[in-house]
Length: 174
Image (cartoon, rainbow, N blue to C red; front, side, top):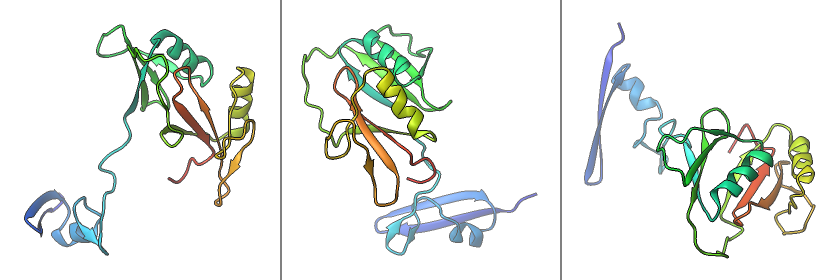
């Protein structure tokens, strides 16, 4: 049977208590949410990305784009609302397309985007080209690829509503 460790720490005016399997000493040395280490907040394994929601004009056209161009599979919308469509990315995370945007043209800053990693960058580019999607590098040059200083390749393109999507070859690290 594992020992139960209790850790209490005070941070300014706030305090926190964790009660987890293991000894209190082990918990203090482990990266626990809320513990300060070398001046920064340690956050590890508390959150994972669950979904991204995009407000779209035509939910059917957008769902077709994401399914056809990116190959995402549509899954049942657990809300049961016909103006919302869900597509799964990696067996867990999803894109929620929410119809009803009445703005014919909405500004979509290049810096605001959804980034998808791929283990096969060449196949992803070929898929974009197959569907007539123009991609850009970070300098917005069409049909060009950005190569970051760490060697990761990336391109950007837009969905039917102008949302920017990045595809990159960074699958192992943030």
